[in-house]
Amino acid sequence: HWLVGDKTSTRGGGVLAGGLALKSRSHTARRPQVDMERETPEAAPPPTFLRGEEASSGSSSARARFERLIRRVQAEVCAALEAVEEGSGGGGVVFREDAWTRPGGGGGISRVLQGGHVFEKAAVNVSVVYGVMPPDAYRAARPDAAAGVEKAGPVPFFAAGVSSVIHPNNPFAPTLHFNYRYFETEAPQDAPGAPRQWWFGGGTDLTPSYIIEEDIKHFHSVQKQACDKFDPTFYPRFKKWCDDYFHIKHRGERRGVGGIFFDDLNDHDQETLLDFATECAASVIPAYIPIIERRKDTPFTEDHRAWQQLRRGRYVEFNLVYDRGTTFGLKTGGRIESILVSLPLTARWEYDHKDSFDTLIDRLVVCCDASFDWV
Image (cartoon, rainbow, N blue to C red; front, side, top):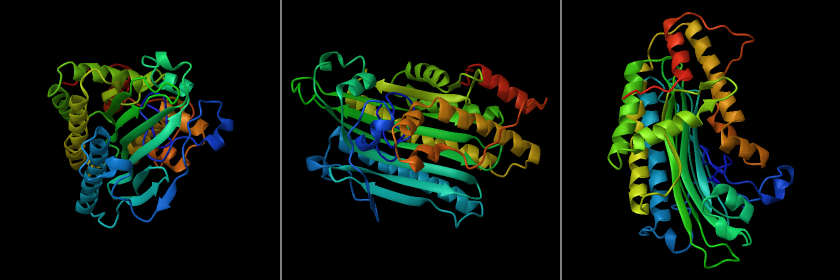
């Protein structure tokens, strides 16, 4: 999904935040070049990042509706996290907001909370991007749809999405990641008769340091409920996709306990999939906040904290080595703050670390070694 925010990628789970690689910097990357205008910081976000007729508040296009969705989700998730902070004695900690635009349309909003009473670091970002990709980049993004553009010219595209990573302080409270995105390509500039392509991607996944079955079953139940409203095959299909994607190959284990993940999704009509993405995004708060409320004040020891730091090391390893969005952004000169916003503030690596026989730790290792059916 050549998405966006410098966690740009051809496929995978990238954070949308800041902008694709700039052509002027791509000489170091040896990757397909994607032409983008430089961003301009803004004192406050504009009402819309869309351009032309779609910028109208009453536009019913898929682009306009998806932008309204992601900005609403960003506002609602940030408000929910700030409410947890305020209710836990951290009322002075709020999200910092950075907004930017581009002259030709598009822009983004990054919201980041750090050093909270409950949340060590939380980022909720949105991005809307207009750009042009060359045919080889288009073929990498959509190999199944690119047969007709081998000799065509550059391909205009539109991409929009919301992405978040939330790292709590308490070792018994899990990390959450979610990302929902929409992508369109127009006809290649040298092949005006070629069909327009569109697809959706996204998912929500959970990464605990300790296995608490009540929490994981609740989380997966909410994901399944959202999927079952549209297609009974969605949850098992997207759960397996999530388990397979978030796999740390050099460790032989999964990053966490999964959730749902999908990409290049266009096998239903556009209206259905837009509604599905809306439902999935709306499930983030009910899936996660009840877990945080139960675990944010759980007593813990320094040993618990040390184990959490080691597990966060695994999170860092996956994001920097395997996450397609992160690695593409780093190799193509993207906005570094947006690329690394998903990383925790602190993590730990120990040479030749040996797991203790703590039951909860053993259960986490087992769960990360295999795929479990939680619901």
